[in-house]
Each structure stands twice: as C-alpha cells, then as structure tokens.
Length: 443
Image 1 (tube, rainbow, N blue to C red):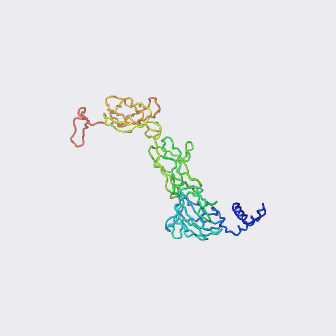
Image 2: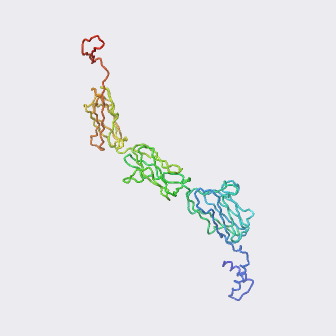
C-alpha cells in the first residue's frame, strides 16, 4: 500500500506545488483517490477462502459428490480460481456427465467465456466478475445427472490431505490461498482379517512366537473396531491349541478379542503333531474374510523308543521284522543328533538277527546320527501262542539323550506238518464195530 501511495504522491507532486517539506495535501488527495478508484485495481492474488463439503468423516475409497466452495475476499474482474485435486483421487473431467469425476461449476457472479478447463488433476475456473462475499462452487463428482459421475477418495489412509485452492482476482497468475481445505482420510469399516506376522515354525514340545492378526478395510488399511470383537481361532491339526499368553501364562482358548478402538490382537500356538496345519482366525458374527496362515510344526527333542509291529504273531522258525523308532514326547518321529546303541533283549534268550544276515545273533543295534529308525529281525523255533515271548529295546549306552525303552510281546505259532519228523500213534489197537467206540490218532 505504501508503494501505491508513494506512486500517486509523486504523480501529484509533479503537477501540483505544495510548500517545501509538506506532503500532507498530496497524501490526502491520494486517500480520496483510493475511495473512488476501482477496488480491483488493488486486488491481490491468493485472497479468499474455501471449504469442502460434505465435511463428515472421509473414509478411504468413499464415492460421492464433493463440493469445494470458494468465497471471494475481493472483487474479481477477469480473474481466475484453480483447484488441485489430491493425488490418488478420481481424476476430474468435464467431457462425460456419466463418468467418474465429472466437474460442474456454478457461481454467484459471472463466469468467463470458457468457464472451466481441466489439465490432469488441476481444475481452472475463469471468472468474468465476482463481488466480495460471493461464491464459486466446484462440484467434483457432480451427480445431478448420474451417480456414476461420483468421485472416489483415495484408498490409502492419510492425514492432512490438501485440496489446494489458488486465486487471482484480476489476472491469470493464481497464488495459493491461506486456508485451502485440509481433510483426513480414515479407514473404512473392517471387512477382513489378515496375519501381520510371518508364518511360524515351532516344535511339538514348545510353542510358536507371537502371532498377530489385524482388522482391515477392503483397501487393506488397518481398521479399528467400534466395539469389542471376538475372534474365533481354529487349526486343521487335531493337536493344535491357542492361548492369549505364552509360556507360564498359557491358558488354552479358542477365542481372543480385538478391543474397541483397536485393530489387532495377538496369541500363541502349540501343536502335538508334526506337519503344516492351517491356522484360521474368523470374526465372530461378521461376514469378514478370514485370516488363514500355514504353520510348520517340527518334532520335539527325542525322548523315547517305539517299536512296530506290537503284539504280533510269527510262525516258528520264521522271521518277524521289527522297526525301532526314536520319538519325541508326543510320539512324533525325532531324529537323533548322535548315534545311539540300542540293546536287544528277549525273555526266551537271544533271538535277534541283522535283517541282511540271519546267521549271527545280535545283542545290540545302532541308530546312526541324523536317523530316527533302524530295523532288526527276530526268530524263535519253539511255539508259544498263549502268552508269547517278551522282547525289549533299551537305550543303555549312556549317550544323551536318554531314551525310554520300548517293549512288546511276540506269539510263536506252529509251523506246517513235516513228514520227516512226524510220527503216528494210536491209543488202542482194537475197537468194537458198534458205531460208537473210537480210537484217538495223534500225529
């Protein structure tokens, strides 16, 4: 303003003489000129204010008609207002009233000969005249003709999203106004559960690292729940169990809860069976997409021996093959980290043989390092199909780990009749031919 005053004072001094050192008269005359000159002569770029409606919460991906209302703070004369739509919103357009992002301009003043143009995300409004206090409304996603023209908000949650409004009341060099509309885009309602932790690997004698699930909207934004939400947990393994706390705080449950205002909940997993079970988390009472993740369950540390077959029957003189296995606390196969010598015991005497050599009796057999099983053959020539013979497999070598013994019994049945060693005896030499009297023949 001082520059304007100096300019006009100099002009007045040039044509009108005042006493030396006295410019009061010139200043007064300049002030009078300000009262009568057009106000647009002093209009400044970047003036005015703007608001965005609707002003309610903007959810990620929301589709509607958005109105940006600009209010002039100075008179416009052949001026301009621009609006820069934020990135990742629907691009504005003025060619198809049925397509997304359609733009319509209305004004309380007079628009220019070419009212609006669009270049990328920038909307330019040309204004012929607009008085102080009057408004220009930019309808972005105008739905007067079709709701298909709506504009969609960005799908990613973000705070401080700016609809940058610029103005120039008298020319084509708009400057950002001091108060462009600023909005926060928040997550839409939850529609799915996802695991935020990677697939877990655990042993049958331990538990998983913490597992966490998160409620998210359809655009994958974390979405806090408005009320406590129960989450049902299940496993495809019959040996799987869950707990909200791990370690000493373990308490088996099938339900954990996402608390109101939060979007995540965590839990721990245990399983007694090896494999790759699927862990599923479902929102109780909701039609949300489940969270599904595969876990890897490995055997625990070796703790004992098992033998198969159990309580079997073998023909006298033939061989039964036993498989001796190392198992963990839940009977899952568990390889040994160092060789283990297994002692072989038979109640009827030593009757074990190498499966590839039936000529030499064995009293022990070795399970190699990194292996979990070994096979041995058994044979006995004497029939015993009442109680059978007890056999046992003992880890007595003193090398850790100390494995619990395995025992079973084996029934020995008679072999087929042999003419070479068979004899025939009768209990009497004569009988009466009366159809009743009989003789016992023993082979």
